[in-house]
Length: 141
Image (cartoon, rainbow, N blue to C red; front, side):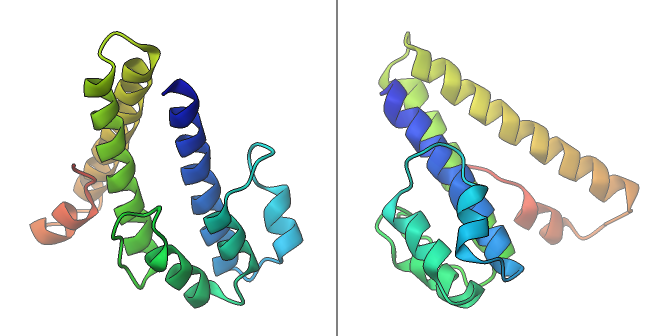
């Protein structure tokens, strides 16, 4: 479970990085240089080799790895992937309660909680009053 957890975290970070770089029409070799770890996964290779961002997003939407994520914009896709990441982390808390994976799952949940708090603070600073916009941007499992 520990190795699987680490691989999933690497996969998530690499997928997010590849999608963001694809948004700026970065070439495949440049994207590969930015990947963390030596092992790449099929989905990440598809995203890297996609012609454009739209094709990369379609590859993610059609993948079995992303458990039904269906988004057509990068921001919404990243949010859906982050929500999926939180759900997996919370699941790890219950699978092996006394193992290292539960600690790592807790840390991932706390990282997401801090991101949510930062987003709420920014919304308050910029005086965003639309509660629907705020709710849409919070990552909750």
